[in-house]
Image (tube, rainbow, N blue to C red; front, side, top):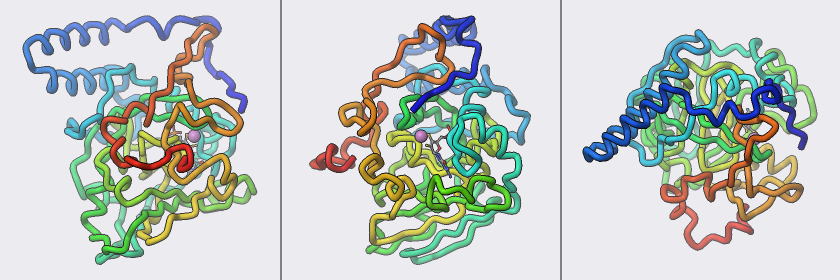
Length: 331
Ligand SMILES: Nc1nc2c(c(=O)[nH]1)N[C@H]1C(S)=C(S)[C@@H](COP(=O)(O)O)O[C@H]1N2
Ligand SMILES: [Mo]
């Protein structure tokens, strides 16, 4: 897949290597904090200050601040991707297949009123108005890496809460083994839903324990604001240890089932996109390597590719979910 660069990286090939003054200062503070034994607290505040410093009201959308998250692995020390990059280089095929299409076309998405239907093998099937869903649990800021199957990655300060909070509320039945995520497919507001690139609606799925894992985020915002349309407004999933396509945007239905859901990408090309799709540098995509990645915003002529990490760097948190599984077979 050809990846076009859209920035003036050619003129400033190493600008991304220069540590901004504010971040540098925070890093020194952090070292002091670590020496004083307050490293845990220091880490979280360093990260949220870093995110805030770079991004205060960046898109001028409605604010959606998040509390510090206590979920293990929910914050990374890496430099946060610039808001402009995170909102202008997107995959959202309902609005076109070029990276620039969603930012250009997604203004037609109608995000209000919005509801998410939670149904299937649960004791309490519920239709949640977005307003109620927003209030279901404390909004937290989580700075996650998101690694696209195409070989690029971003670091985004998401705002939301663990999907598990919603799952507990609806009380799944004992025979619920999987969760299916169905996203909006409205040909009137989504120009490419008429196209044949995918079998709409865009559907994704997780095994129950994956859906319940605290890192699995139901996200309503990023950079301290509500989600921009092109990033999946008004509510999406973020599953940071899996390739980006598992993180469905603009969710309208969550269904509990006893069978592995048929996902949109698996239906389109079963040999290329498995159900699990865990980030795994040791299992290549049939058409390209997954060993390295390019960080969006570092796309200058001389930018280094990074080594892709097992489970996108979240192995300590999620590795045990796959104990004993052959990850080459279950790709
Ligand atoms: N509904 C829907 N969700 C989607 C997609 C899509 O085309 N439609 N693309 C996926 C892919 S391939 C990626 S990499 C991420 C990108 O999220 P971002 O644009 O917010 O970075 O969204 C995922 N969610
Ligand atoms: Mo992706």
